[in-house]
Amino acid sequence: MNYQIKSGDTLSRIAQQYKTSVSELMKANPEIKNADLIYSGKSLNIPGSRDEFVPGTSGSNGPSLTGGPSQASGPSAPTGATGGVNGPRGNPFEIAQQHLNKNAGSLKLEGSGVGADMEDWVPNNVNCANFVSACLEQAGMITNGQHHNSVMGLQANLDRDPNFQRVDLSQAKPGDVVSMKTPGGQHVVMFAGWKDGKPQFIGSNNVNSDGSQRITISSMNYPIMSVHQYRG
Image (cartoon, rainbow, N blue to C red; front, side, top):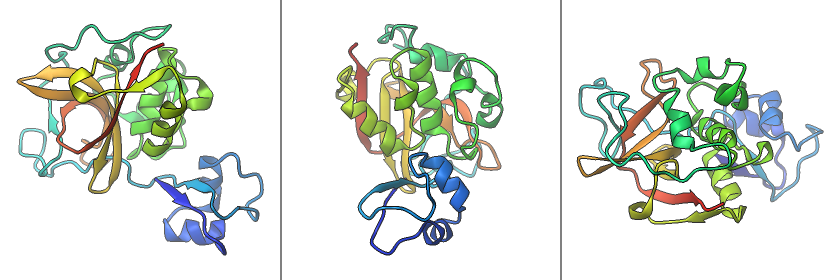
């Protein structure tokens, strides 16, 4: 989530409003060097704010919330999950698949690959953009400087990148970045193909009983804000 700083705001007041701390706000916004010096009109990334879907409460075998995700039955790729667009170092969907069923919190502790590119300070319930960014980095599609831990921040970075183009979902290929609007904020995943006529998505999703995220393939029915496809 991004917050637009207003006249009279202080980091301590904003931190109190969003139930975080000044130090976490500064970690999420490294451009801020002085906690007492922020500027009205600037955008502030709020760590730990909800940028993910809310899962159903009946478990993976029960119904999900209306408009929400439905767990895929297993780690096998959905129909049509091949032939995605590759970056200089591979396809982000195939890179993400290698981490299916890993908890985001554990993945961030890995010393190489996607885990090394994920920022470990991000709370374990809001890693969707952190994970997608890391997969794109591993594929060579974005730089570390383009990595963003908020959905809207990553979307904006891809909009500014001439190597990415917005496409319709009907044109999506595995590995394309899909940003969605959810009741609690936003969520970002990658397109993973079609299964039984429904689009499938791979990403860091809130499927654990404690609300933390795990890498899964799901069907989701949230309104799509954008689909970004790498054109190189």
